[in-house]
Image 1 (cartoon, rainbow, N blue to C red):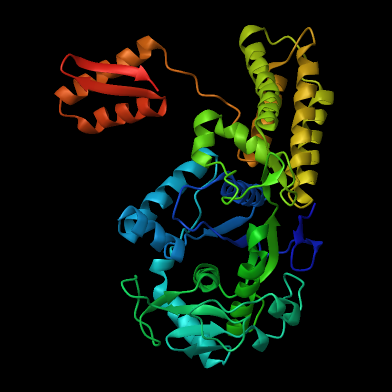
Image 2: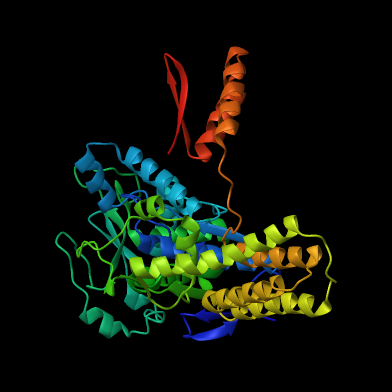
Length: 466
């Protein structure tokens, strides 16, 4: 069955056809790294990681690019507040982002480009737009002219006059039209800056993604994705810049995930109702958080409450319990049942139903319903007097496979017993005596992964559970 994607550019579902056979070029707008990410940032990370995973499951090789905006007004302000260098601030929050999303089962991107590492490419891109008369320079600033691009507004379905009515000229801006937006900003006193044909300065926000998408994926890409809030002006401006310079479509499919609400209110820092992802991970199983995020179709808004998260945990625990019961039956009973075709057909049907849901614009909500139905069938099979080990394994394998496509791990790591910890600590002590520090560090890291904290004291090594 073919995959259909709801294309935000055309506002309809379209059959997905990649530019290159069995290869997908996918760009996702990443965070501006001036603080820890909140759960609204975590949603697109999870959603589009799932899209990537499903495309890979279907046999595509996905070149997945997610950028980091590491120079920006907010970052400069944050660095000044902390009394730190900009690079120290951005390095810390990039590292934190990668840690947070990894905990949520997000695969690392093929490329994670940073704005500061693409400055020459950005300057060349801007220069090309100036040369084609889509942009102009005034006192060190460079602005793009949306009126020069005939299709401006096609993503957000707004006319140029409607957009102009809402546009304003900010203090310090000197531009021909309120709708014109900055491609390059002249440097302020003491601010980080790069040399350019227009003097020292730094790029505007929108030009970054156009440049990095072109650099890593080419002039036309398959899928461009991000949060719904980026549709205008960010993605609209990306289209205008890219298509004005390259004279070809920028992205064939545009995907946008819905908003995140907290207790039925739109999440907003101004309202103070945002939740940091790492704080949530500390309190809850990351796989439950991911399961919760995927329980709603990505284009719909999702409402976060403690009650709804607890409900998601109870639902996921039912699937986990089924998986554990299958394992227990395998270990505790003889292989007496027949390998019935009826049950194998039910397992295979679940796979087809799962794929049908995901083929229909990555409908993870319906895909999860299919997994519940499979778990229900497994429970019915477990009620039979005699069971077949191959069938038990088939149920387990299908449950694990379908969940893994969603980026959810069902197998839980077993906690280390006290005597196992003591044995590892003793091995570490012997490794240190033998000056095998690599093995000693390896054991420390292993224990840390199991939430075992080692403390070297004058009386020897002590340990405690985190």
